[in-house]
Length: 291
Image (cartoon, rainbow, N blue to C red; front, side, top):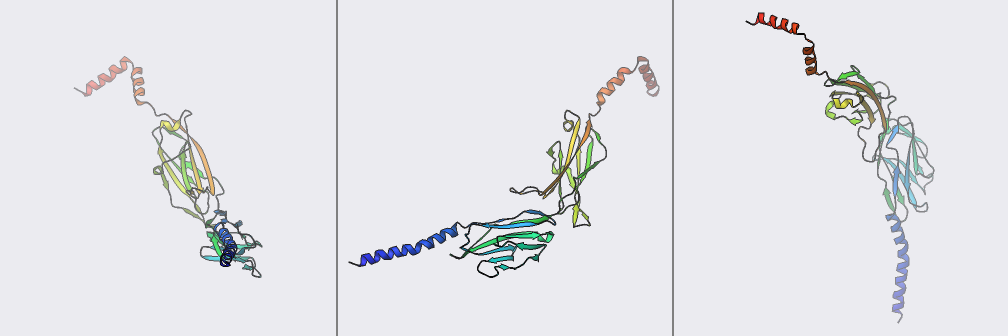
């Protein structure tokens, strides 16, 4: 008669021991790790990288930061001292320091070598489980200091003429990408010629230059008789879906457009102004040459 009671208690004990394991497994399943870091950072400034996670302090074992495949920082809670390295050090392109709880690193005076793919990992003690954040690609840029410059041969064009204009960005790194606009609308790339980049001796900076060539039409002038052309220089060239321009400069100039002369009307006016005697003289002169 005792066996059913023993079996019953065994089930209860199994359930009691299983509850913590189930709880830990649930924690692992809901463990969230996110690296909060800038996609673009200005040359010479400080980049802050935060490994945000949901692991409680009593279950935390380790936090690691990586650049590419290389580990650049490690925090192990039970170790004394818990940090590797245990003091601010120089890594590729920056001086790195860290927070006491190991969740944040700061990269000071970043240079171009600090660009790369960064990631962080967090490990729990019970159960032993590691989760990684989605990597973040960080790029060190040197932004443009001025708006681009537009140059063209003249400021007044006749309908039907070919308008040619050049746009040059101010020096930057990486080289800016130039986009042309006419009256606020982006120009067909077929009308634009991008020239090879020009290097600038300081900080590996580069200029971008692009030429616009378009035949002026009456539609360009609109009602006010002016055409607006804009040059936009951006870093990067084409941002992704969740990305914005890290650097954008724009210049707009106005060009006067005048209608083309009406050749037919001009000829009619000339004929009306000719007197009968003038016409007879012309006919008489033609008769001398034509028998």
